[in-house]
Image 1 (cartoon, rainbow, N blue to C red):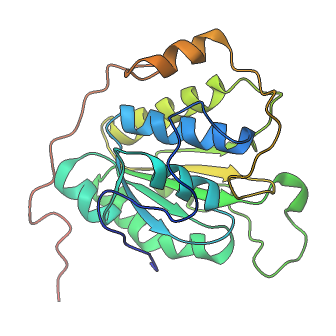
Image 2: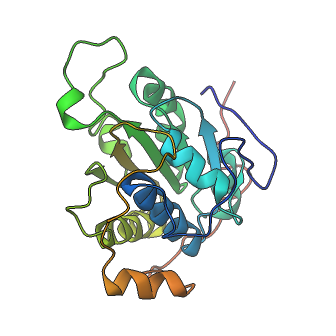
Length: 233
C-alpha cells in the first residue's frame, strides 16, 4: 500500500504542537486529538500514514502527539501483538489496504485501520474519489464503526468509548484488524473555529490523567511465531 514513512517521533510542519488533548482549535481537532490520545493510552502509539487531504485531521493529531511514532502496521503488529494505526485518506486509497487486512485477519495480527471519509452528505455524489468505505473490508475485520463526523452536538466521550471498543476488539482472541471509518467536514486544517465546544466533566477529568476512559479485561494473544504468514513458492 502506498505510504509516507516518517522518523520516530512523528513531526509535522503544519503547526506547532499544542497541549494535549483538549486544547484544540475546533471541534474536528478536539475529536481527533481525543482519538489519538486514547489510542496511545491503550498502547497503540505506532502509526503508518498514507497521506491525503481528507485524512489531515488524523495525521496532524498523530504528528503532534509527543508519544506517537510511525512504522509498518502489519509487521509491527505481527512482532508485538499490539495494533499499529494505519491512517489513510478517503477514496480508492482505502482499497490499497485490503491485502494487509486479509493477511492480518488470517494470521491473527491486530491492526487499527483509521480511514478518513467524506461526511454522509458528500457520499454517493459520483465524484471519482468517492467510494463506499462502510464495511469495505467485509468480514476480514473483527469490528467496524462508521464514526459520526465531529460535531459539538455529540459528547466527545463517544470518541473515547468507540476507540476503547476498537482496541479491545483488535486485541482479544482471535486478534485481528478493526476499522474506524471517520467522516470529516471542512475545514480539514487546524484552523480556529467555534471556541464554545462544551466538554463534559467526565472527559475533562480523563484529560488530566493517563488512564484510558474505559478499560476492558482483554486477554492478549501471544506474538506470532516467525514462520507464521510464510508463503510457499
